Image (cartoon, rainbow, N blue to C red; front, side):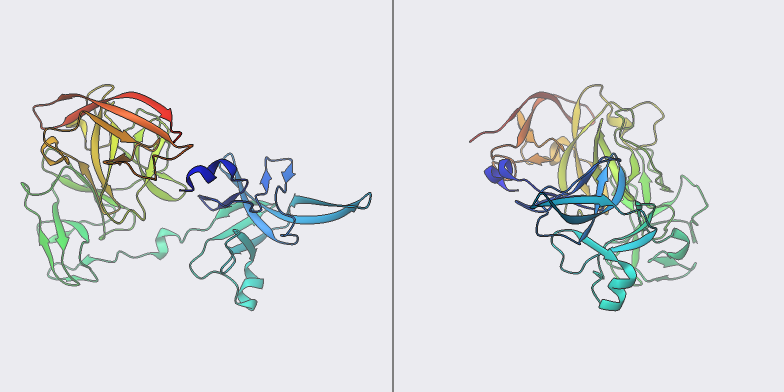
Length: 355
């Protein structure tokens, strides 16, 4: 975070689904009709992908002389072309993919976009071209790595197009070594499925059953808290109305509050803990998402007050990521504890911090 400097930021770079704040950076915008080239005097001739209302556009920064003065502007490029993020381009600019290929200036690990008439779509490798990394042929595992999860029914791999509720959860410790997790040992929640591309996660319920699930598109509407949805080509878990959390890249367990307004018969696994209007703690990382029991919280009994940012990430102690000017702090107050060992909190108050 930028702390107090956040108030003076004048630039926002749009890079795919990411928004990177940079003080004084070129930050073109396009609202569907008008292009604005704020702060782009040093970026004439460059092209940028900008996002508005969930749509991506490609715009070019231009310079012109008007009345003896230089005017910086931008236009949406209307020809159909493909673009890649430029290598080492911290400004977020993009270049034509053919130019980038011939000049060697495409970022090998960056994003690419297909643009038609100036409207762009972030490229994603089709699932039909992908293969599961961890497989089981009926007698042996292969291609796995430590920490991988997959689900099998006795002796037979569950295929992408097979729905079962009695699968057995396995966790791998190496390329060919995966061991069954006993029913009493796994947590209710979601596990990233290394054994399937189409069914991205494994759902393990309070009924001690695990099955692979296909995550589809949607929004976090408040009626689907605790469910997995696809947003911006990535799997997210819905924490609250309008509060998705992207799972990709969360490599270590982090605690968040999730609102437990969960409809009966919903698609998520946390129905056992539903409590209207209350929040409970979930442990989140890309490979595993589960509820945190009261007995597993940092303090026992649980803290009376917990603090989060607006994304509902819990901070156990004062931290510059949250306790700096211009950050909104949300306070939660302990409400009750249930017979199922869940601590429930209520949204108490929030304020913008000013130190």
